[in-house]
Image 1 (cartoon, helix red, strand yellow):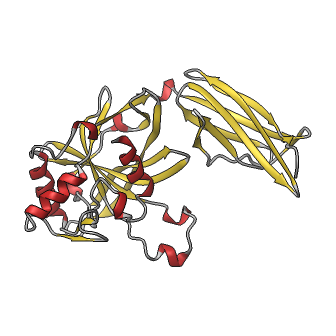
Image 2 (cartoon, one colour; image 1 turned 90 degrees about the vertical axis):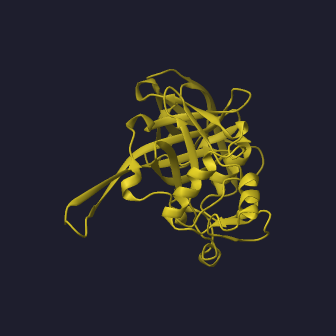
Image 3 (cartoon, helix red, strand yellow; image 1 turned 60 degrees about the vertical axis):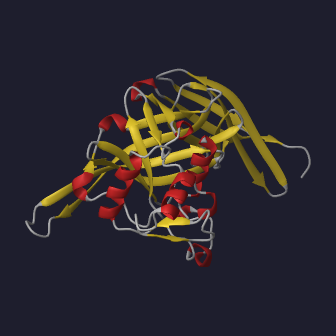
Length: 303
């Protein structure tokens, strides 16, 4: 089931109903009064697959915003998280709000930075961001989260069409979209939580924490014929790019922090005229490491 969660989060910025397991909603699951903030969630976590390999990286970063109470004039501080989700050579960015509903914790995800995706304005104009909800069973010592089974929700709403405001995008079998306001959503999610089959065993996954002191960093200097080069730096794990946002600056230096200790393949490449250059190096990072390496670009054979 993990591959479906990955698919959801990576296409989360646009409402592609046909492949979504977690049913999307037009409205959030929270009001300001429902939000809670747990600092133990902040940090870098790794999602493990059934083979005990890293399937994805979740990075929760503390965020806050302030507003003014319209009635009292008092300043209201809202704490939440920015989530950077990295899997299968792609990155998804979300605002993440932790919601407490009668003692049950939920994570409301909403896509951000939509302009960073390579789509035309006309194409993006047809996409609708949506909220999705994860049920948080526990945070310590490991995060255990699950989601409402999409097929179960489809059938439940089909059998009880008055239970929640909804519509369909695409086919009725795959395109369920929740349209109810927040208050109704909260009652519906709590009601479903107690229903047999709404959460399956396969819907749960563990995120293994990596505390700040246990993380590692790497500084990469990219050169060509001994001179610094401006270009991309890729950090790969098991053949998959997990960091691709890093770019060396004019001095040829790119820095990656908050890496989970382990063995990585660090790569870079550059095209100049008709020639292509690349370089790579395997590095092993231990907790607390601040490694520095140099990648010397080598010309590939052929134009």
